[in-house]
Length: 634
Image (cartoon, rainbow, N blue to C red; front, side):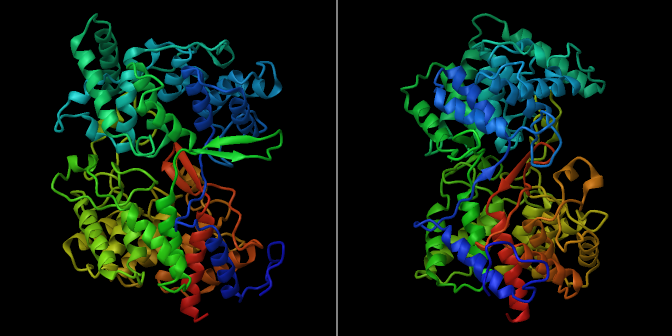
């Protein structure tokens, strides 16, 4: 097939799945790094850039050229109504818009500039600064635009709570605890480095309604008590708590200078170190700032000049595992050079260090994989399951070395099962909901309970490893069947949304021995087919996490179409829905073998934080086309 310089016209090349697949594989190969890994950009929202600008102002390390490049990016993401959204096509977000407005004022944008006036007017109409989340108010407090007295706090003494106590730090999800511990120091010290402007244009001077539920009122009262406690002069317990918290933070600093491989703990831990007297010449601070600089993506040809934006995280291990599996699904030889280079790199990335997950599983040997280049403290179950699924198919030069790594990974993954039979991402039995009730916890998901997508990946891995009849796998299957939605789909915790969950669960169930005729599988198939778009693709808007009317509805995307097809193909469907879905992928493929995907299809925190994975638009269509081609003998 000759691929034109544009997308195929409708109806052209419907039968040429193999040509589309070969073009996609060629594109994927071109993205592989010499060392064997892949990494796509990981896009989120402008709060990453705004908070970086505020951090550099607070630390007095801002550079005019860097400020302007970040500001250009923020301006480029503003919509006509003056807002910034958490995801493309989504509604305006109050916190994103507040932080973007403040960052642009910091960059010198005039308060009376039309784009600034539109943003401020929208903020006031939607509750104002008074209605912002806690994290936004913390940033505003740091730069003198909000009063620390009106910001909920977590005391550093929380680090002393024993592991059995409510609200101990290990009852928070790993991403939350990594932020809360350093923020407890920052909020205790209450530092302020004022900006040269005020936030009056963002204020309504209307106090949000007081909490009405008894538990909410109790926590608000506790917050007042803690603020009074913080005023005790020469408090030795507080001094000791802050020192202990700093030791906890330093013990978890990664090789790249960051914490957990994600932006929030990196910036908050850096602030905490500075607050505790660590200078810019201290190795921990130097490494932290250097690591944060490595998260920037440079855009040399922006509409107003060079721009840069900050990734919230980087996903090379995840991307490489998915890319490896995509190549193998496409029929690439298991001893192909690209396959072997990817496998060797992944084997080097297997984690053997201890981590916080051992609080719940102290006797479990470390053997998982993390998401990022450097994150030995927090390997995750999802990455580990997918790495095993991919690597087990590789014809490695040292099969015993590979088998040993896989066996250890399977043991670790099985050991991370929660008591209810399912698997979560980073911890086992991280399900204590009290942490979600405190005033500080309005920024997203703060616990890590089992999810359908992670559990499905583990069940599929166990089945492929010949462990479908194990107690762990059978209980995982039962967990999945119990947690099927009434409409036949499954909720997607880490991907958008029911197409991701369903596209993970159906292949896992079938691989584990559940018949395609099983009522749960047939209900899932019916749901998928009922939600196919007129163009043959599938899509689900991220608003489905907060508004059920959006479930299964949205513009078609390559990755979500692939997930829907993976479910149908696993269920042994051969009908029109599959053919139209495959045709959608073939016809929308770009000339370079990849696909366009404007909308985000990854999820950080449902309802709060979303991710655009650059490689999802490529690897998952390859999976779907590869499985279809194999079935058709193409």
